[in-house]
Image 1 (cartoon, chains in turn orange, purple):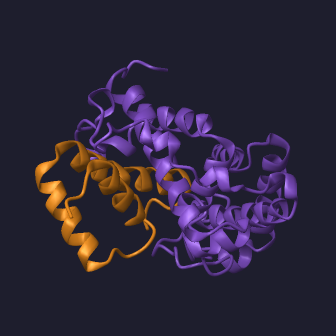
Image 2 (image 1 turned 60 degrees about the vertical axis):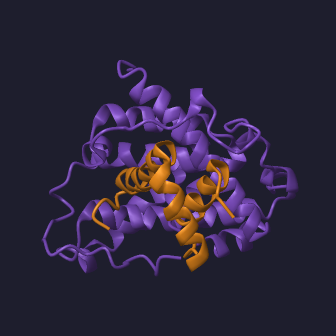
Length: 61
Length: 204
């Protein structure tokens, strides 16, 4: 089934907390190829994590 | 949990406890603890205890790691203890409603596509963003506006570095609830950052 943006963001958020299943990774990758909004969301998830670590004295991790 | 007080954050540099700017470190720690605990008294206590613990153990430590990351790791453990203690009080506990997706639905149309006005735009060079003071200022403002219960889960995950399975156990919620709360928190935070950072870089 095609992933919509809402479910794509759910997977991108969960990817920060657990390993995604292969099926989830494939459908997410496919969605990201076509959706710039979600692409930006994805990059920002990683940036938020880095910013949190930076603030908590763990910038080198 | 991140294995004990002296965890694996050692850097191959020798830095002495007396070399660092304690006032600056204390301010940073206080800011961090206040964000986590949302209460300046508990934050003060946690920072004080962490600094004392660090000072007492400083001979064992000298030269083994960066002072800042070491002291922060002690502080994180203190904060986790306080959160754990608080979670025992029923008035503080999370309910089923805290795992609701309503807030997320507002971001998307009926087909689950981004609503035009909240669709994420590009933030430019990511490496330069989080080392930018202006961005970190907005970041802190946005964290403070997070709803208390969402913030608690988010902070435990992102600042204290706990796994979601541990967070559920601590807060007595299901793991899927935990994921929904984190998804909500991150999406809100992202939107707040975008409004503050991209659309209005002049915020001070």
